[in-house]
Image (cartoon, rainbow, N blue to C red):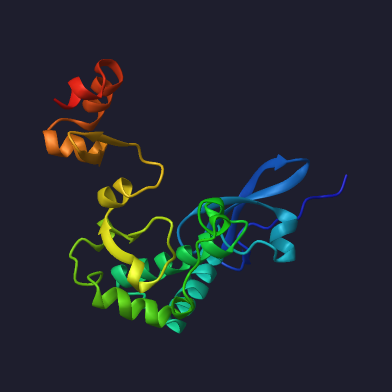
Length: 214
């Protein structure tokens, strides 16, 4: 039988081999300490070949570096959380309208909803956002990009920054109820009547609209 190579104390990238661990799929493995402080178990052949050089932190840092360069390239600021969120709002807006592999494409691009030519560049979108309440809202993580006409495109004249609650009320599949000449979503009726949303839904289902909203 081939004698196992003793790797104790040897370094492989950011990893230092500490001791042999239990074989995995008949392959020798080693318990290693990463420079970041994490411990991980790695196959000996992966250490020796250089395929594994950290607990995973090296890969994460590489992705973060690429991500930050991309943000800065398009005028974002890594140190500003609100600005970083805005950048990914812009990316996701384009993805759901233009990437057929995006899970949300069927509700946007497939329905013919597009992003205006101006907003294909991040800088004009960022400028519009700052001039229309995004940056100056102290709760920017609680607001979201909303289309005023849910069947319209992403463009300055059809977009606004609103709370998640307002956007949920604006969804095209929301059930709207008309009572006494006023049409509102169930959530809006709940606010108007001062009752819990779930309670009002239950009452409508069991009592009917007129009694529930009376």
